[in-house]
Image (cartoon, rainbow, N blue to C red; front, side):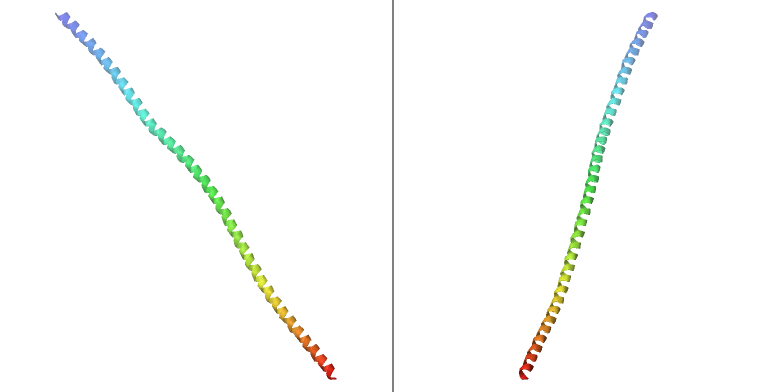
Length: 133
């Protein structure tokens, strides 16, 4: 009887050890699966953040390129406006010069007319004096 109890006890212990080993393997497998799931979940977030960063870098580069282009165009516009302003000043200077020349020509014309009238009057006076003599 004692030996049968001992055998039964040993049998139960072996059975419990086998069950413990099975449960240990299941727990280890579940822990590995959980760890892998967590890593995968984190990797998805990291991958998304990496893709977003790449997109941001590309957009920042494009923005920088556009800013440089805009700056060059602005400089061209400023140069064009400056040239236009200079041309307008030159036109104003030419107009002023033309007015001064026109006024000088009027003065010369008036002086010539006065001189001509004076010479006609002298010729008329001289001719009248000759006739009187």
